Image: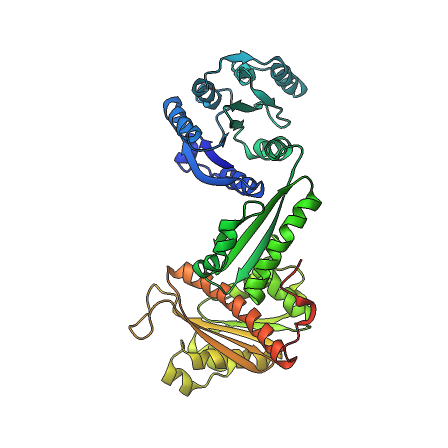
Length: 429
């Protein structure tokens, strides 16, 4: 089934507030196995809101509107929905009573416009709001479902999780999702590798999401209960793991790439140090963001200048002069130097041109070298990234984590003659 999201509020159009409701609802609808092809933001104008709602009803099975259920004159969502669906607005006494109780408990007096929130389209399913005065509304007609939710996130989120999710999933069924996260494979290639699975699956469904240097596949199944849903997921997740092999770093939605790398280090009793030039500490910060990282992280160095590279890491002056700071040779010496002075089993070095200036025809902006030393074996990779300065630096950090993980897996695969790495860390659950 398809779902469409309509966010109501002129303040959203003006950028006065960030539309976190749409992000929340989109994610939850994906968890429910619903396909979302359209999202809209419309101001507090009944004519435009009516037009957007009519268009949505013509192409989607479920329409979820958030915002515009307040007591003021510019709160028009309910009125527009009633108009589009030909429903008369009538006083809903239970809602009126709840509004009275809400104000009485706070020693406040409801004003006349508060009763506007108790007016409901005829035949509507009214959803109780435990955190505010605006009830939710569900309207059903000709197989379509129109759901109206209050705008404040502290009202919308609990209402959706407690009442709307069970309604949409059906009381006799359960929705269960699992995320397969891969790294080191580009988005287009990853999708090509599983296109037959995506096209051929209706339950479970497979939805790809591109991240920075990663691709996530959300696999969602619907069944009578969670046990049956998990059973449906199992062969699909197994097939994804088979196709992507060691590029799968986790099937846990909460595990980040940096956590998978830290877990990989910890499971094999390895320590790591980082040395950075163009990223200026961003790689270290991302690794250190993982709880418990003190067990594996030894030290970090920011050697932005050539002098720092020589004095701290022992990079040879001749190499810097002949090859330049952004080169395979310097990246290799940076990693070897960091490993030597920190006595860490793993050392990762990055050097590059983040821009916007500093590039040449021979060495353009976006040129980056990343080196990884694992127990003395050094691997260097050359990258040509695009984007602005921030994007290049962020992509460099993600690529460094991916290279680190890849080098650790490859090193231990070689020294153990093909045996799996201890703990199979980084491919949890």
